[in-house]
Image (cartoon, rainbow, N blue to C red; front, side, top):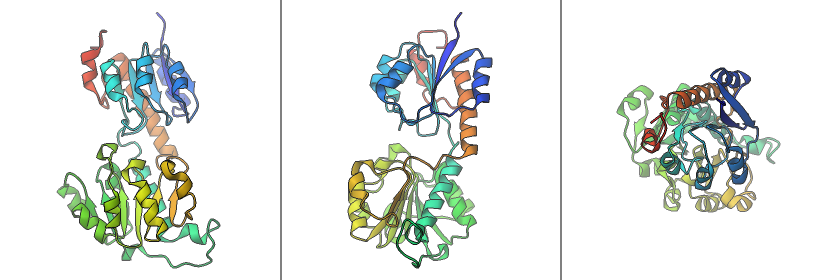
Length: 325
């Protein structure tokens, strides 16, 4: 009986992870690329039973329609819908999907704090990327920071802020979390109050939240407000944000490039609008090791047992025709 084959993209898994898969009777094929186009992914998935999504490629409906033997996909972070937009189609093909919840929450929160402090202290203006020799910044004790979205990353961000002694931290979430309010010593406020009263707005919502800051929302943020976005590009109306930044009213820092308005945004100095060249918040040694371990265990469980604690679509079994159903 031939071994089931598993495709691993980018450089997610360690040699130990790969050996663990081989010890369980699987064959591992690596495609060590960060960017993979649709046709290339389709070709690479031929004959594969498992697929560990380690890069930033997108699993489209065309990809799902093309697979012949695929049984399981494991995504390298929490919000799998971003890179597996065809998750419903995968479920209806009987393909199990698992993610790695919470694996990057601490690192992403740290990165949000890093870019926030860099903007607050004008690092990009007074360093070699800027033209100033001195420029007055602001201290954390004089700022009111608002968090939109109090999931794992939002909670970790709040913990970091309180650990640094930030006296005023408020949050808005679709579900109020009174226990967290007590534990973190933060205050719940309606979204419109967050926008009008906070000096910094930091977004930590899942993709399902859609547009969090619309053109109207941005207009209600106080002058010299700072928008931090480490979630996903569509969380903010980028065109409206660029206009507000160019007017000198707002500043922003993102953990990804503003691709939809890149040429226009690229004329703005980094001190007014900073962005990462690609997602960088998750990219630490400890996080990648944790993700590799989680993804390996999940893939073994899905291919051998048909289930895993991080399975996100148990209804896939309704469409399976093999013994895993």
